Image 1 (cartoon, rainbow, N blue to C red):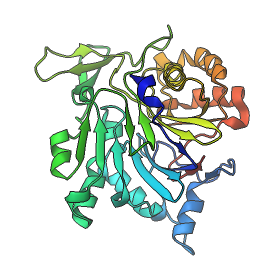
Image 2: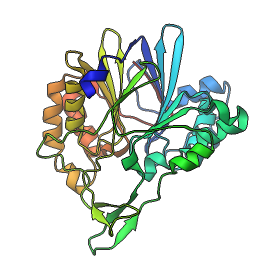
Image 3: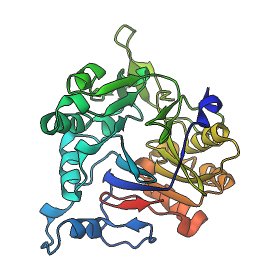
Image 4: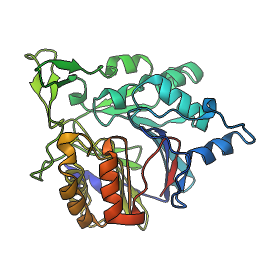
Length: 333
């Protein structure tokens, strides 16, 4: 299925990514010319502002990326995940001047609260300001809408907040595309994957994670989190930019899937959460760093659930090819 439609992904001239939500806020660290930091973005929107905490974007556990894809004089605007709550994405988008009513599509990577908690906000804003008739598309798969939780050492389960249902988003005007297969978005602008094959023997998902279907038995082990999807764009002359929001499949599995999907087109960059934090996943940092080298990525932009130990290991291995994510940044490809 992947190879049959992957050729429909069009080349784009440039990609600009606004980091609307990430765990980290960093005002001072330097970076490459392709990254505009938080404070510079705020000052461009509000010249002459007096620096104060009320003008800063809010870091929160989760991820939301505003992805603008440029093809000629056309810009396609995608929102990849929406962070943990409506307040964070609403505040940060307003401070950065990122218009949530101008989106063409909203994509949910997987059904966890820290990626789905703010999903209602762009549709609510669009409905209030422009009317529901022209609301953006919403892309997800059916596996995302089950109950989730974490099983503790004593056997008890801490439940996660459910993502907004498709029906609820539909009432806000979302044009629903709930499909488990890979697909091309917005006339060739981006590619949304299908289920990621598990190839490596060390990427084990999220131990302790459980799920519960409405008609099924009690909590069941769900460490693999098979509903997660990755997003890709094809940057002219450079190759594929992969967005992997949490990488529960393992980032090596994700990159291997992308390489298989696009064949001779090289992988240029990866951006998102690599889920190498936590006691279980920190153990596989050496293998992950080792095997990522085989993809020869020009840029690696880790954030959210990657964790400081993995970011440090990646920096040691790949040097200036690494630029850690932080809220308020803009990354240009």
